[in-house]
Length: 312
Ligand code: SAH
Ligand code: SF4
Image (cartoon, rainbow, N blue to C red; front, side, top):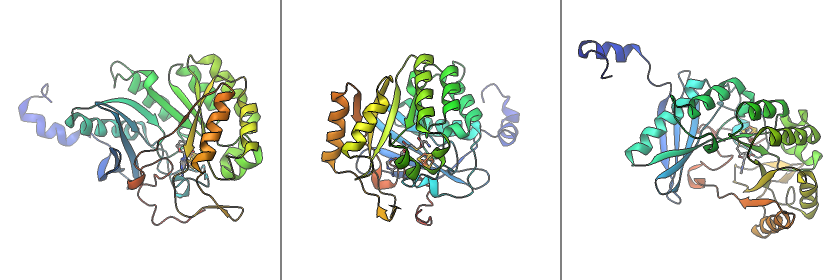
């Protein structure tokens, strides 16, 4: 504003829209330093961003790419929101701007941005690509490509395009099950892209990128955590340059699959999966989801409509 003559500053500020989003709510976790910020879009959709204060001074931000998701995954609160739409790049980037202001006031710096909030980023590919370019660019947010990550339900052609355009940006693929029928049941939209095609896309990303792909596996009791699942996963992953992230299931109300309620895996089963994968030489970690007490953990983001939404 200093470049604008004093006399016209008010008129200038009134004419230029500096922000696309209006903060609507903020909830701070009492447990782990996560903060959920709810924003309102100009057409009255509510979207959520989550601040993860992981190390002192350096923070991560999980941003949304859509106001709902047609993925319809049985385990995910965002997948229950009807009538969603793609966010614009201004809306994606304004989450980063607004949260950057919150963090700056705390003397913290934003280090990582993960597109893992509401929505399927690769169904909003052009916007996501232009937002990534702005986040990484020297005349934009100046974040390192290595500190950006896009999580997808697994759309093969879009994975290849993203890997070619952004060799340093991380890709995370929500595999969850290497068994086709189980994956089909859990992730209705993903049926369009069978596991063989997805595997080929990850192989291609491996040659296009100079970093490993993250494979996300949601740990569901008796559904994705059995010995059969371990064997199927190891076979499917063999030959890929990946690291595996096991995600404990966060509750999103009552959800059933074939009449059986989806439940989190017992810690012992997660440990067993972790050890089996490590024994097969895959780098494997267990995700610590922050913000579960404020509905901000993975899968719980619902633009604060979670109370109204119906279980699938
Ligand atoms: N649409 C993208 C990104 C948003 S979801 C995708 O599906 O990858 C981000 C991650 O949260 C995904 O790995 C998703 O499978 C996971 N997730 C969804 N619901 C969850 C739940 N109830 N508990 C734990 N993780 C969940
Ligand atoms: Fe959409 Fe991802 Fe949720 Fe599936 S897990 S419904 S793809 S946001």
